Image (cartoon, rainbow, N blue to C red; front, side):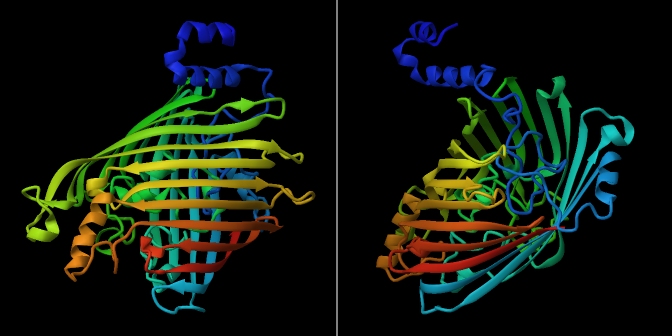
Length: 484
């Protein structure tokens, strides 16, 4: 069917269907992209500690080069294990930063260091015992260090070191352990076990081009907007189903436990706490993704739209048990079940250069919304560019620039204003009513040796902790990554 006949049959009122049909047409047209273009698979788990082409990740992953190792093949051990169905990876990420200016107090010159050492073990059970389509994935991390953002009085989602936190200062923290079973010639996959939401939903390898925590792993207003949106390195009991009804189109949904103890050392410090004493409900996301490829240069894109429901009870920020302003009555806060999140994200290669399959300039953008009456953040927007192989002769380098804008919940701000007028302490670690914060970040990741990257980074945070009375923050950072 031609595009013109399709338009005439659908009509003007169904423009969204026309756009979707156009994407699918481009995805299915064999003349649009080279046969080797890897656009049938989902983005792999994001984050600088993910071995993006290991058995843990999906096949056909855009944006990422083949995994390298600073020590080669470990004298042949890694390929020998892989042939038997055992994938093993070890890597290190260190992030240092120094405050050049800004913050609640004069903290110019304050410096911080945080690191992560990660180990992943992935087993292909078809190679091990002949169980077709079944794999298991397990990861551990050691995290330690100092959160530089707290020196500046910022405890929001704009932490300048994304690698900090979540895992606790412990020797070993369990990130996840789960299995995946493929069906229908890999057009359907069921995942089940102990895993976070963000390895599958609202994720992209492009996010951790950047050192700020606003989007690395996933847009962080999703995580701090809902306890149900668990993210690495903390997992919950869960199951997820993904289906590819058409080439370049996937649908996925899942059921995840809501663990209100996540992030509290008393409950989840090591990740090995498997009881459900702090579970309060379920988190159910549903995501639709399109992966078109445009033109003779195979310009790949990812377009995602999703909604999620958290069934847990949450206290309201503004209303007391009778629906009156909480700061005025002093009564207990109203509590209600249910929280909704929606997000729409995209990335699109807009220019290809170099000989590498992933070399090119990508445009990325996204939006997240949280239910305002019981979420600390109502909106998040981001817009950025990421370029792999920008400089001729340096295909492993990555340049990035991104702007993130985070808006506080209108209900939370209304409550803070009433408390502030009465000289009382404010929620959300604020000294004055919050509004919004903007992070402008520029970074360049140098590929200095096989399996070794050094990345200088600059961040400018407007309204740290979403407070206009806090002096804007300038931070110079440095990330080092080594895959052993």
